[in-house]
Length: 166
Image (cartoon, rainbow, N blue to C red; front, top):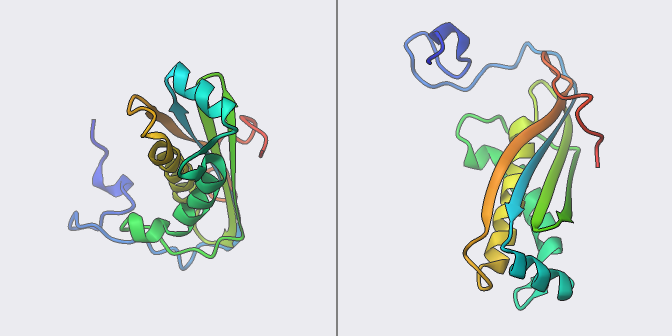
């Protein structure tokens, strides 16, 4: 199902892509939290746990945290119509549940547009980094369930009761 053109904010009257003008929007505190899930084969998850999440490439979770922050900051270079934002905060929290790494990225800034894409990008890049650092052990890892958990400070807050900030 396609939406009528008037509902697509990144398309102008001639149906051409455009960056949304946020100049008249109020500056507010904006936050967003996103999550990515990386599922390991059981033997890989066990080996990583036994090794303290350190591989020959380094400390997997630490490197993934740094990569996630870098990814969130680089969002406008990766997604063409995103506004460059001055982020006030970007936290990457990674926790293991059985054979899954749950990667949460929480981002905030004071601005006139939201930080959802930065949170989604940060979680995704952290997951990709874990994959890269562990691929010598297996290529059977799966990155999935990348989703926005929460956003506040804009026209439409969502998920505010869904989850606490890590």
